[in-house]
Length: 208
Image (tube, rainbow, N blue to C red; front, side):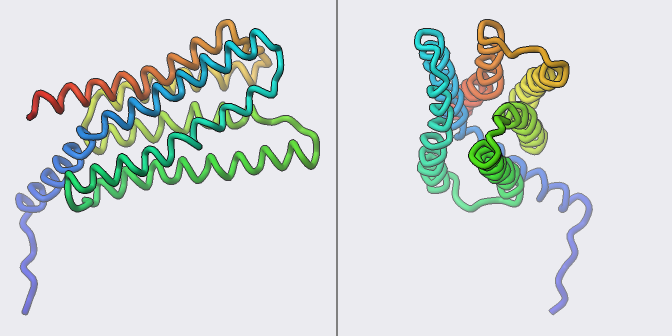
């Protein structure tokens, strides 16, 4: 039996429906964005205070608590959403793979920086900071464009601007002093995760 080909109108309707389902799923994901945002902000403030009072760089290892806590919590929250919103669409897979690529590359870069530190005694952890502040916003901008959510797109753009400022400071040998960079770093997470998360949650409530 010959398969019927979709017309241009039908194809557009399928794509529109797929985007709508993906957007509906992400309207349920505002809590995930908020979780990452508040976790990162809390960690940043905690480490900032500990470094200021103890002057011990050992507290910088606490940065790894963000993915250690955030990843399993995200896994649990996403499983809960899957039960709520049903089957995963193609758009879902694209956005999921964007963040998967980001997560895997972060792990690889962490291992490389650790290798440089342990084997050669070279401290290159700034590379992780720079990469995170560039790659995460790019992934969020792409996600926002796919699901047509402006809060994600604009949050990513502002976050990317923070990342570019950081790159210029590193290349120009401008010290990333805590007194000005930590507030900027906290702002990054607020505009990237917390604000879009609350906007998405607000839209969810008004759609019910």
